[in-house]
Image 1 (cartoon, rainbow, N blue to C red):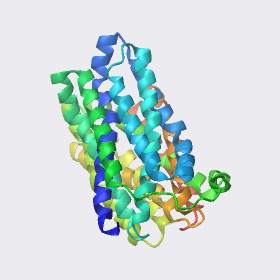
Image 2: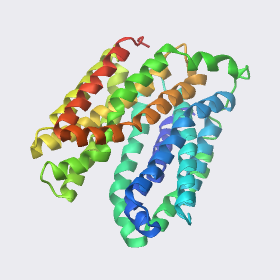
Image 3: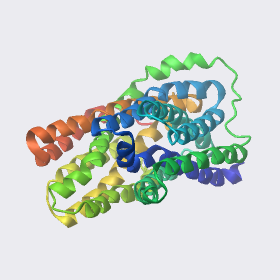
Length: 385
């Protein structure tokens, strides 16, 4: 099985891509959904909120279930069910059923991410897990580029319903294939009472410090991705198309940064200092956005992409190396971190919009950058793994 670990990781990388398309393809479909169902912008926004609430609140249950029955069955169920509900979204006859389907899609996706990490991480040594996780996370950013680029054009040709149906059906097929490829790994040999460590993990000081730091630093990503194009077009004097290309550099930087940050993590002695440097870089990068210069935009968005994915990658790697967490409870620890940052991150777009309305984009970027610095005290108190 060790000889096939990279093949297994490669397959999970592909799963992560289709998982992301099922997450984000609906973004490009929103104008068409709004027109067909007669929805205004606030109602369309509720579709995103329903999804984030679903994926956020089920992170901990997914980790608990993985601790009980193993990462493989949980991650496969998460991938298969999220694909099914995503496909079901394409058949929704009304706004209410579409919102329910998006909530169910998010809830099911919560059972794939953390347990998926728990599935492949034991196959790699401690000095290889950073690179492995970086590759796994690269799938998300590749899926993001496909969703916001390819799928936006595909919807114009075949319509939003068929465009949502296709990745859902592909995800179901990939679930069956992944079940065959991963057969024999991720099984639970430990038959001891799994509940004995649940409370310990949920109360763990380091896990909550990571959660707080990632929510503060990584949460600003939600504001940048939602309002970046608006800012670049309205304040930078760029066309929407050009602004979209610049905004996509965030994903390009993330694709480069995922494996790079994982490898740097593997060879860096102090993980705490590394995460501190990354978040300080995020603070500077957000403040630099106030300069209305095309070259500054290009460099800033690319570097911010690298830094954001580094922040997330390091935050998910730490629980894999804490000995007091252990492999059995790693999906629960990662799920807790991810759940907190997803629910906390959902606040950032609204808060940033209110800030822009009050003090304008320039001051809002500076305030957002300074806010990232509030994560440093939480990082400083972390124990080295």
